[in-house]
Length: 207
Image (tube, rainbow, N blue to C red; front, top):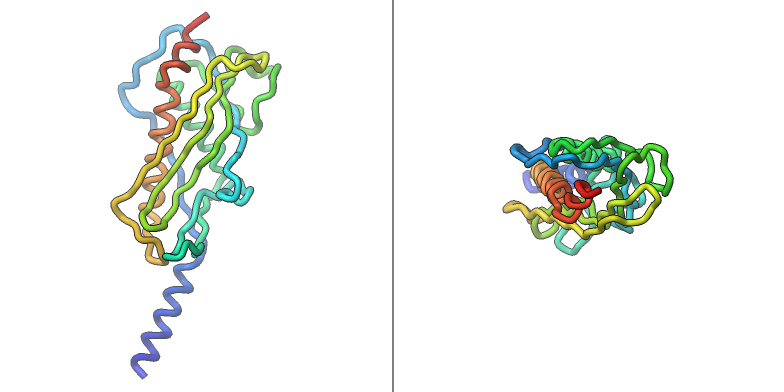
């Protein structure tokens, strides 16, 4: 009888653990980022979502939890579209360097967009996820493009940031808090790489 009770409890735990998970994305600029003197204005647009199956084509999907055989146990979501958070984080990151920056998170850049008074920033986003497999990891990567208002590319750079956790193992007991922590750390590091990239910075301060 006692074994049956434990079995029922274990099954209930497994079913409870297999539900989809939600994390909160947040970004705060890193302190003491050197200012860019006399930088041209930047409008940050939505990136083209090139994640493929990783995102299910859904604007709120940011990863998953997997079992030992690679079987998906849960999907990881954000309560609001992650693209807006990414764009706004880049805006904040550039503003922390005293670059006049505004958001156009509702659309991808098109040549001649009237909101662009200096440069436009966008590109192709390949990864934006936090996952539990054998370890917990988060990965953001994109081909970041700085455009002139006429659509020609002023600077282009592939930037990738991956964060691995000391925790992990996958399965239903995965810490969602840890997945959230490393996703936000990857976001912070990715934004820092973009706003401090020497080629992008040089173009912004060049007539």
